[in-house]
Structure formats: C-alpha cells, structure tokens
Length: 70
Ligand SMILES: [Zn+2]
Image (cartoon, rainbow, N blue to C red):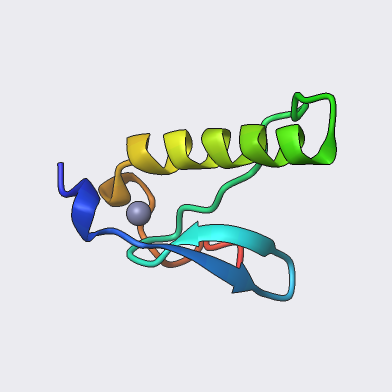
C-alpha cells in the first residue's frame, strides 16, 4: 500500500462537497450517524471515520472517469 503518497483534499463540485482522494475518484460519504454529545465530539468522530475510510480505500478501485461524482 502506498498510503503515504495519497492526499486527502477538500473538494467542491456541482454535486459533491466534501473530502476526496487527490489520486482517484474516491470521496468520503459519511455512513449514517456521526456519534458524539457535542459538536466537538461529532467532529472528532467524523474525522476518525473519514481517516479510516481514506486509509482503507484502494485507489485502483476508484478510477477517475464515468462514475466520478464531481
Ligand atoms: Zn484514492
């Protein structure tokens, strides 16, 4: 895995706004509920989910092209 060479970037597109991979078409879509008792806790949980999914995705599985949500 070349996890270190990938970059998480904030993307603002017509149909999507959020975190995405700079190397492929992967984009973070929060899977349901963000847990936490405060905005701060929710933010931490959101970032944990995001970082975990980003770290585990495989760029080759998300080629840029037809299905790009941007
Ligand atoms: Zn990627």
